[in-house]
Amino acid sequence: MIFQKAKGIYIEGRKGMCKINPLKEYLSPKYVYIPLLQRACNLESQVKVGDEVKIGQVVATNQQQFNIRVHASVSGKITAIKKVWHSSGKMVDAIEIENDFKNQLAETIKEEKNVDSLTREQLINKMELAGLTGLGGAGFPTHIKYKTKAKINSVIINAVECEPYLTCDYHFIISYPEKLLKGATYLMRAAEANEVVIAYKIYNKQIREALQPFLPKYPNVKLFPVKNVYPAGWEKYIVEQITKKTYTGLPAEAGAIVNNSATAIAYADIVENNIPLIARPITITGEGITKPSTFFVPIGTKVSELVEMSGGYIKGLDPIKYHYIAGGPMTGKAIFIDDLVVNDTLGAVIVKPVIEGLYPECLGCGKCADVCPVYLTPTEIKKAMERKDIKLLGDLNSNKCIECGLCSYICPSHIEITEAVVKGKTMLRKGGQ
Image 1: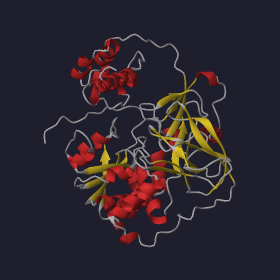
Image 2: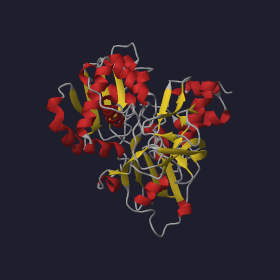
Image 3: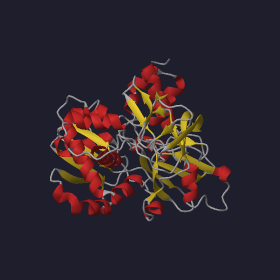
Image 4: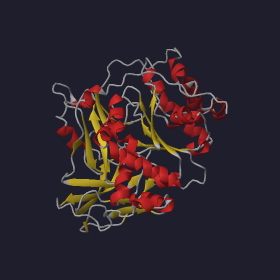
């Protein structure tokens, strides 16, 4: 198949400030807050104030969309249903659980004695019951991907983590290398695929060194280093690099399923011990943090507690002038404060001093078009969006935007071009309504 490959550029990673500190576990916060929102799906609480819950117990569901299940991440008492800040930038309802520190497990959490004999259907069912989602930031229910009828040749594990500042995937892999290989192999079996390909940035030699001692036990797994460019972690970029094929809808069209490395690690616990998705790694970093760190925490942990455990904010800086980002600086969401909670898609919170002296006028330099990985002209799309010219938005292929953030990143005037292009993309989809 002939196609125009996505391009990438080098950008400063700024990961060193956090890489030097090992992964820290913080598994016993006094309270956790389980958001009643997953992606754009509202959840219905299955518990009420006063109920006692155990770790792994289902506390919220949405059976109308994707059959979502969300579980208690600590044991204790339901003390409130209250509003909390979410990584979406909104306040949402959440189930407040007061930790009893007894670590009582739900009866469903137990060792799986027949791992080798599990069928494809059983492996997919485990994903669904565990509420497994894409931990790379998309949050898409994993079991939906594996119910495809397409022939899958390769399960691709995305360990590229090309967003600047973020090290949560890196630290998780370094800490649990064989668990990654186990989880990836179970995913391969669930897809009835022939191989697992783990994609990582070529400069991340530590990932290769951590995995290599275990690789002889997993002959269907191979490593695939990618160039140190952005957005090398974009799903389509990885699929094109590995399979030499492209697609218009889903990777399954190219015979592949892509999962984040943290998702694969979580799946190992799901298969072997029936532990649902109740925790994840998260990076707290940026020039405003005293000791940037990566943590493994229960879902629902307050980010403000992790900031405090990272030494707090740099002394001498005015907290009012901090810029908070939920997620990576390229694709994340600007937020107001650190008083949000960890959900399944939140891989980082970045704290940076506010840039002074912005120049909001477009200079017409064309840098945004030069770096666009899918060959768009972002400033023209921005103009069409502002004029609400639906036909022109279509002619400019606005729908192909992957929301990578490069156009805003490269803009010398610091214009939020990505936000404008995304608005244009949405306007095109809705037909101007």
